[in-house]
Image (tube, rainbow, N blue to C red; front, side, top):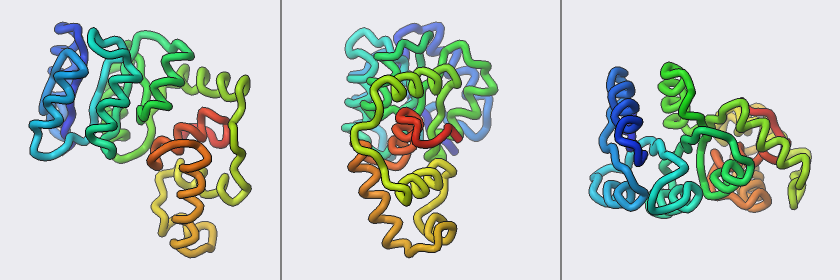
Amino acid sequence: MIRVVLVDDHPVVLQGLRSYLALDDQIDVVAAVGTAHEALAVLNRLPVPPDVVLMDMHLPDLDGPAAVRAVKGRCPTVPVVALSSFAEEGLVVAAVRAGAAGYLFKAIPPEQLLEAVKIAASGAPVLHPEVQRVLLAHAAQHGPTDPLSPRELEVLACMGRGLSNKEIGAVLAITEKTVKTHVSHILAKLNVQDRTQAVLAGIRDHYIQAP
């Protein structure tokens, strides 16, 4: 069962999301709240962290990136998927840098939203095609600050396919310990904290294509 927390300050949108997600027997909406601070309170109360937080990027108490950062600070391993009505470059880039594991539009077809939640829960990034375009355009203009080595690019590409360290080692014919070292270097160079963020940053900086 995929446990989801919804955060949106529009009651109609919140109820619509909750009702639709509840139709899928693989998803359990454990909370639906209207502010970032209510979301943080829910995360404090839940005995087990949720599998996904689906969060609007225009909340009344915190801006989207700040809200993402607050949730990740409370539950670092929980994927936060951003929801917005448009792909403003500054907001998209800031949300990804804050720790968002995905960025979707509210106009997304319902069946695609269900699939995106499941993908995010599995640990893979979820990006709307327009968001991918914005991230790639940003990377083309600004460029990465610390280029990855050829081997690190290979490891990152494998991470983008959702492979574990053991599986990456088998594909590249290197030890699992060596893979872990490469992953650590990738996280440091891309200034991110986890594998999902590394993949998103790799897409943003045009190192790899979106899976």
